[in-house]
Amino acid sequence: RNGDCVLLSDKGCSVYSVRPQQCSDYPFWPEIMKSPFAWLREAQRCPGIDVGEVHPEQKIADLLKSQQE
Image (cartoon, rainbow, N blue to C red):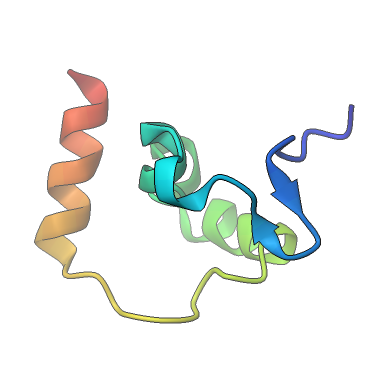
């Protein structure tokens, strides 16, 4: 109802090892990557954004391109 993922529990993703492709791509979705403001807005909702490994710019660009195909 509030837009949160139904697979997300208090302990994180309940199906992480078999999560759907769109979940694997998150947060590198076009609507989130379109502007710094969109990224920061999403970061307020997701505590995992800007935490963990840094992804190479080319990897992100390739991922975004594959989502448009």
